[in-house]
Image 1 (cartoon, rainbow, N blue to C red):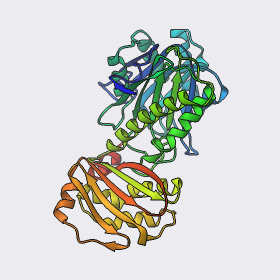
Image 2 (image 1 turned 135 degrees about the vertical axis):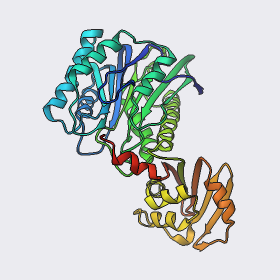
Image 3 (image 1 turned 120 degrees about the horizontal axis):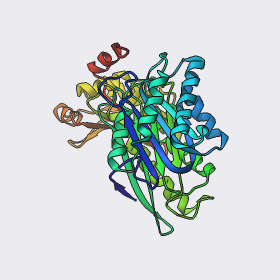
Length: 407
């Protein structure tokens, strides 16, 4: 597998475009489109929030129906959540506009929204945006990058990646883009994400691969403990790589899963590190746990604790906060078995050893925690399973951003 430049336009047959639709933001792009020259098999995972945006319900219907997918239209600024019939009408109007401009069936057009909940989308601006983007679709890496920037809300950086891998003598490409800085918490993918590949693969297998990979990537990030109404991750595969279609599990399927995990993990880490107001990526790695689920629960509890996040921000090696979070996580363990370390590019330091606090170098601990990426490493000594979760520190800026989000 090789990481290459690009994102959603890297795979054969995929194009992207963006525009300034002025839906909420001024003087910036706020609408994007991803389009495949031929219909795609599709898979998706969606928010676990009972309150689901109209666009989520629209996309769920496409994915579950077995229909092909050929385009995705995304707007930034307004979430189209809690919007009643008018919200569903906006989804259909957007899809119908794509049908008119590009000649693809409206029920093969996915839609996604991000932004303020409870506001209605200006349909005329959506339709005008679709018309403008339909004339500027391009396969270039630049088009993919611009699309990844157009879907941002409070994100400070765009998030995109692409990889290639070999299957049966054919070069297959998988690319993706995502956005997410706030309202990020398991369980689902906690974001908007769009993956494109020229792989030929059975729909059911593709869905299984995506649902499996999400568990240890997007389901392992948290920023603020809030799960969005709009979480959507879509995967489109058009088969233009020319590989023999994957119809059963085996070496080819495993290779695809490896690439999918790489891409999803990359995007997940990028989102965690770009949490609203964040100054650091905060990682928790739990090893030698009794079960995989225990490892996931424990690592997510560590990065999800506000006290832990504040300690990371303050470069305070207050290890009791991390142990406390583990203790109320719901996982059962014996604290007399636990070892805890702090790690970063500045070094590695053990601070707790099987029930006993250690006399450690406070200056070294501070230096380690001042790094841009900080890891809390926990050895449970109770089994062989492990998991890693990602979050960010809790800063003053998080409150500032969310105190005036609507304005």
